[in-house]
Length: 552
Image (cartoon, rainbow, N blue to C red; front, side, top):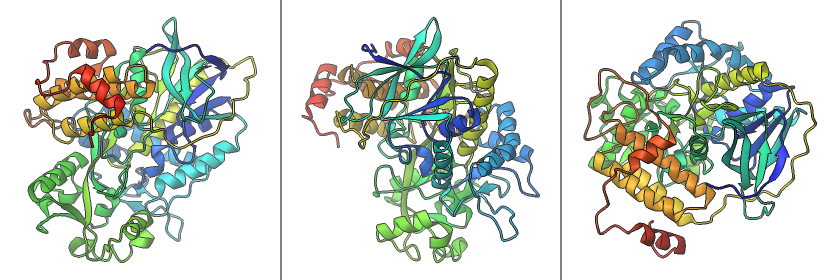
């Protein structure tokens, strides 16, 4: 991708791309060091962290230990979790929770002030810290936004989206940006910084059904790959088993904590199918439950989450106080949870893969760090343990802040004030390309995968790449999708969030995947051609850009 001539802004010491939990926490931990935070949308709405319901996993209970938390993390990751990273995550939890409390976060507690701990799938103990029931993401982000807004060391540059890293002599020196909305006519900019941190979130919006907002589109992965960074574990996409179907994009999430509180899954016949699939039944690891829900929908046409009867007890009656977000969703869609199962389906929820980092959050490129869902830290392996995502964001945000403070010299010059710009809602240019890409990924690179399906996906993505040439956001989205599909094609086994119908076994020894852009490009040259009844690249480009074909 060629970057046009751009105006130049000197961000000084540190540029953080992304204003979600990982980005804001890193900025706050860097204080009083000067930081510029770049975000394409409104700070209060654009981050996926706002959607998190369950909470933060932390082994703070009297009968719990950090070692037990680490072992649960390793077990859930299906043989690919880095044990040292799992230990780091678990042992850092207490300090990072205290940081959040210092920043104004108030976790749910008993009258005596002790924490209320919930339990979620694949955890051996009750260790999930919640906030106002199922509002953890919103409440944490609200507190951090307020804290960051009051910090003179943090400047926000809103209305610009990063599309390409700036590299000089092998070192990342900033990022090229474009206006994030049609109303912004400022043109491209180069924002220079001594240290650049990617904290943009994941890639769930590459799929047609997802719990992620539109900003989680994999652009960060593509930007880093184009600059030469190593990408790891891209094939591992976690599909949350209980997204509420037919209720919007992104799909509302029925948090795992509901099943921890007694809710259970049924098919169209009312049968509790998970008991026949895994010893932990409805509390099995997410990848197992997602496949169970997928199968139930394929077999019977329906999968539902029951909040009444059997193990659920009085959950439905107390839904408004215990899980207000789910209660509001039920009210909005005229669902009575006291006698009606909530319709659910697997949805792309979390990307275990991303930009490969080490224990300080450094990528393979000098000058570039990554944290949050954009990074592949080794903490999740093939399948993330529930409520470890928010914890990972703050643990590595803190480590990156410490690392930058130790190695990056302070600025000697003042920074210019960021330009002001009007923010509109999401752009809708060339929507057919995005819609087709999301359908390809859901059809061929979803819960179940095959060799032929993955080859088809890569071939069709190649057509979209040519159709989207020169359109920065879509070119990046296509490249991110190619990394996911290519990595899935190379892994000829089933493990965690990656399930191959043609390779259903799991090998005794597993290894993390690691690819660069040149690896993917070389692999794509050997793909077979599509059948004759599939559009040629030129036909696909013409149809998509003209809107002449309906891919809905």
